[in-house]
Image (cartoon, rainbow, N blue to C red; front, side, top):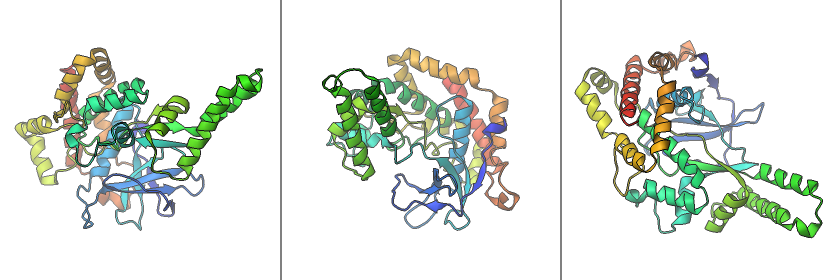
Length: 360
């Protein structure tokens, strides 16, 4: 179980990449490891406009969710412990970038949704952010094969109680460099005359054009750009990321302590936990949403719940959570995840697991 213990890295002397912006409401920076030049995200907990740290333990929820997801064999981004002694938030979660910005890019769901429906305003049209809307958008851009990934995210969110799977918390990765290399290889290996492999050369040219647009940091990708990329450029659905809004991270320690011993209170908490992804304009709790999805995708939902069931072991889940902060240096012990929060996390995961089994 050692591989599910969060590692600790001091990033104080790492380079901050100032030319890039990140989205979301949490304190987040892109930093570069000096020796390897690999890019990472260093992310704290939710920070309000006045500088208040809203949920100080939120980054721990992110790390715990990551390790639980890996243990249950979900395709999820690996989060570990990062420390910056000069930062406003000195400790947070550290994750390696999913993309190498010179070679590929992550296009967040928001870009596809607004590309498909230009009148859609993510900030105002909350009720329109539905499973049906996302499904139709994916289908329009020839990504119907990724609906299974969307279902996987929804089931995982139900297990951890994530309430913030908004449009920027999922996406598709396009790999320009690999696509260009593949086109070059096919062109070199073909015996056809130039006029017979014009399609390969056109595909390579279009990929190069899209890659150059991205390198210029162009934000205005049109619907036609997205269609070209979906048809020509190699792509894959991103690993699950940004799953920290879960596991009671919004409650102070006093309330956490009460919830652990109050079965009625914790049952209400589970019932009131909702998915950010709506169903036909309505916001449902996670398990009601899965029940609706099971009517349309019975085999896929059963398979996802079964995957959790066969990999789930209460003792191992307990061990992962109890040891999540074991690698934190002794001088930083005040930043450890509080034992009461660990206890609540364990209880919530087990209760949600049993609720999922009722739906299989």
